[in-house]
Image (cartoon, rainbow, N blue to C red; front, top):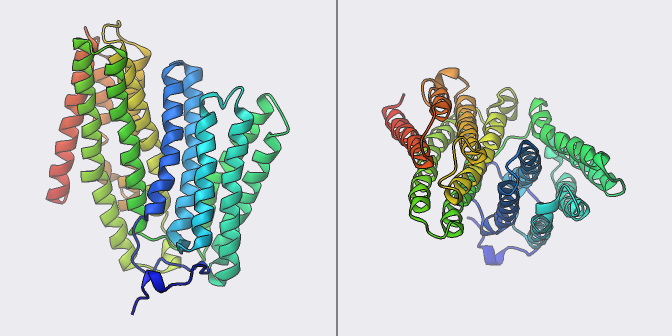
Length: 395
């Protein structure tokens, strides 16, 4: 019989929880808020600098912060015990990411040192958690070894970046991010790979996506405010909201639902570590969310810029940001679905066929921003409806 939470000791050693039921905890939801703050700051900074340089900075920092979130999520997916030690560590990590949010607007300038120090603090917390798991779960050590090594190397690179300046600092950041990105892939390659919890994982990624979608809705709302509630701005904002709503519909009704069901089905059929190691579907599911989340954030930036400048002559940086964001969203959806089913047929014709359609719609000269956003919204709505029909038909 399960022990009541109130009867459990305050300090409990980490244990592998992939064989039991698990859902996202309230602590994880609180933890996510700090990352959303960073994304908001990065998005607002990108909005103020819609150039190639602004995009490169936004994308690079987004990837870094997203991988940080993935690192903690994969740890909690396997080893979350919700004891006092884990809670304090997770709250300390939340504080460190809040520090990243406080410095994100100038992370490539005057506040690069505070940003690096805050990011490093979060990495050290994760390193401590993995060291604790390594001590208490001998069977998991082969997989933990990968994360201990990569987190330690990444932390060292972030630490060294604090004592250098100029381009060298950012090259060290890039190297650290590359190490973080490689960790889950290297772990999967091992024959004794530790499986992930296929009930908890899709839920966690879905929660992050819905929070980033909230930023897209916020872009439309802020744009209307900054435009002084001008009638044209209101119209563009409403249609922009429709775009965000169709992305929500598409992701949760088709991309997330289909991929989660397939991952759970495969996990039930072959739950052994060896079977998981032979199949990289987990990695494709995880990394497919990177372009999807990045694209969603860009959609919010693009909508906000178009709402603020509803009478601008097209094309504008905002219009291209919106279109590229939608294309990234679809590319991520295709990667998630194709990875879960391990078949290219899973992404044809839906959603792949929508990628050239959206690109062509953006290339056609438009007389107004409202017409452009309306056309994109129509394509996204058809995509959402068709995805729902196809999934329920089992195709």
